[in-house]
Length: 100
Image (cartoon, rainbow, N blue to C red; front, side, top):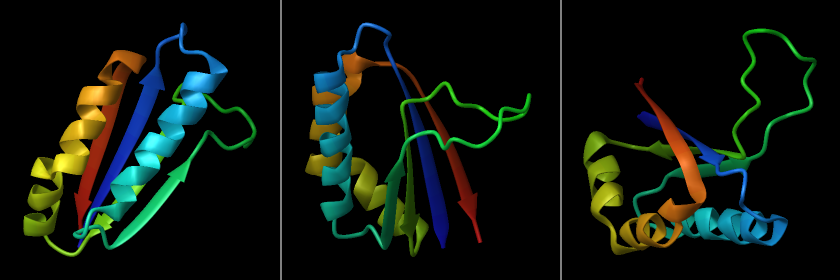
């Protein structure tokens, strides 16, 4: 199992409408056939602590059953179109991949 966690930090100039559309665009990634499970959310309202990062706009976690499934996802036309259509909106993207 591979856990693929992605955090999107959007530019300050992104409007609320663009942010909403971006979220819908991220959800399109769940339709890729190698995605085993998908979660998309925004920073939780947990109490502030120095170790909690809340500067991101969206956090996405995808579970893949294998590294091969992950690699298929990376090259998939839906994923490539998502990057092409949305990279202008983000300041940075941080990814954490974990295997179990």
